[in-house]
Image 1 (tube, rainbow, N blue to C red):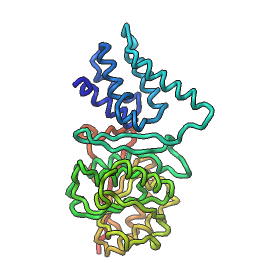
Image 2: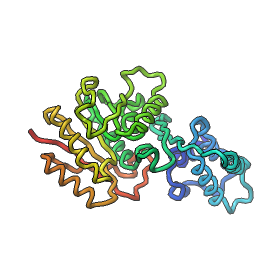
Image 3: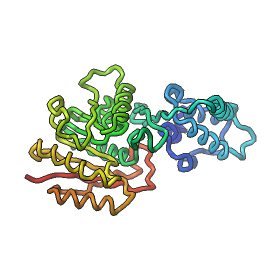
Image 4: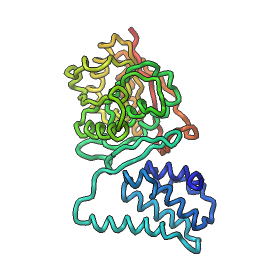
Length: 324
């Protein structure tokens, strides 16, 4: 199929991978007009993007970059111009009202299966950074997909789940991962609402048992969480939650409570983008002071990644245990 020629660019476009880092070199130039049409159909015209469109500014940047790549072509297909003009027209129409602060991303999985997430178009929105998916979540998702035995029969609790990517991934029926109950939590009510919407997007006709649970959990109020309503957690997950050292004490208190509740018969996987080495080191020191054993985990290499990951910043994954 013609669209298979552009599978990588399609995957990158649908998850809003940085335009300047896309696999433009995979294009076998020059492209005939039919090939140009097929490329637009596989990206801007993809059914997922038509139903749940990615960020408008991203689509515009993608088409402009494509036109630059094809700058030496004598003719460009009308669909390329139409895609750009359509985005510019929408921008003009929306000039008066405020543009939507939400758009969609689509993470392609095996056999054309996918995860669709509604996300914020801004890094910080509604007083939280959790309304968009961060690189550490993708790295941790890769790790879990490469090590499914670590999920075998385990009930999972995610802290600071944000958009809900990890929990949705773990319960995705196409992946058939051997996981038990999955509970995704966040301290932000806006994040919890967004997670609920994303669960509905990805589990439209599934039974309640087949979907992740969603709840608000503020770390400093961990004792008030309705623990009896959920299975006891065996595995805790957290991605990009230790960038703010003012939250360390409440996060450690939450970990202490869960581990004590489980008599230390649980473990955690923590993924962190290495933005500030000192901040990361400080938290690891505090973990050890609280009696935890921290073991580094091997990252999944880019060539084996199930996602389009921007590896500009390193991600560290550690396993956290506490001995009796």
